[in-house]
Length: 417
Image 1: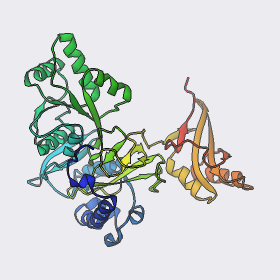
Image 2: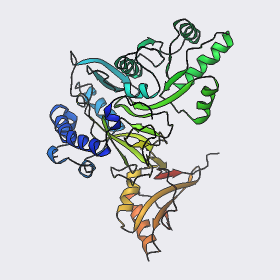
Image 3: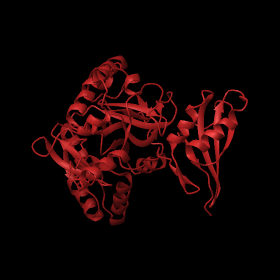
C-alpha cells in the first residue's frame, strides 16, 4: 500500500460520513448567515435538519451558469463582485482574487493549503524537500496559486514557470533540476519535445501531476516511454480539489473536504451508484461555502476501494459535459424538460431525447425505458412532450436497461453536412 498523506485518507467510510454529516448543517447555516447569495437560495431551509444525504438532496442545485449570471447582475448594479457567494471580503481575510472565463471572480482565503492541493501532489509522488516546476498560469486564473500553495503545504519549493517561453522552460529545468512538473500534460509534452530538439537532457524530471485537460492512456504511455510518471487531478476554480489519481490508476479518489453527489443532468436527483450523471459538490470551505454546486461535468462512482488503502469514494474521472441543452426547430430544449416529462409517468425508469434528421429538418424521439408496453402510454407521453417543450415528438418504449449509461439526457444525432 502507498503511504497516506494523512489519517483522513484511511479512516473508515463510516467515520468519514459521520464527520461530513456533522459538518454539513453547520456549513449550511454558515452559508445562510455569511453568504448573501445563499441567504436567498436557502431561504426557509432549517440548517439543523440537513444531517444526511437525503436531506442534502432536497436542497436546490446552483449551477456554474447561475453563479456567473448572479455575479454579473450584481456587478451591473454596482454590488458585490462575487454576487454574494463569498463569505469574506477584501482585506486581511482574502489574499487574492482571481478571474476565470466569464468572467467569474473567485476569492482566495488565508487558510493553509486553501485549495487543498497538497493531497493530490503527494499522491502523484512528490515529497517534502523537493523542487517542483509549476507551469500553471499565475495570471487571472487560480491554477498557479492552487498548485503553489499546495506544494508549499507539502514542504516543497516551487519554480513559478507559468506558461509559454518553451526554450526558457527547458533551460530552467536543466539548470534547476526539479524533481518533477505540475501543469497541463500537453505543455510538458511540448517542453520535452523542445528539449530533445535542443539536445538538452532533463534527467530529473521523472514525475508529474497534471490537470486542466484530458489525460488519456495514450498520452500517459507517451510520458512513461519518456521516463515521466504522470498522474492527474480534478479541480475547479470554484471548489479547489475535488478528486485525484493514485498509484493504482483506478479512477480518482475524492478529496476529504468535499461532499460529492452525482445527479441526473438537469435535475438535483441523485442517480444510482455506477450511473453516469452530473457532479454536484458541496464544499466545506467556510470562505466560499458553495452548497450543492453543479460543476456541469459528468462522472460516475466507481465501486470498491482504492488498492492503495485510501478509503474514500472513487469516481471514474471526467466523462463529458452535463449541459446538453440543444435547439430544435428554433427552440431550446433543456434536460430538465425531459426530466419533467418523465416524472409525470411513474412507469418510466429512464428517459433520453434523441434529436435526429438533417439541418432544418429536426426530428425528436423520446426514448423511454419501461416495463412492458403500458396501453396508451406513448400517446400520453407525446402529449406531455408537446405541452412542456412546445414541440412535437415521437415516443419509443424500450425494456429496462436498453439505454446506454453515458449520462446523456439529450442526444444530438443530427447530420450537419
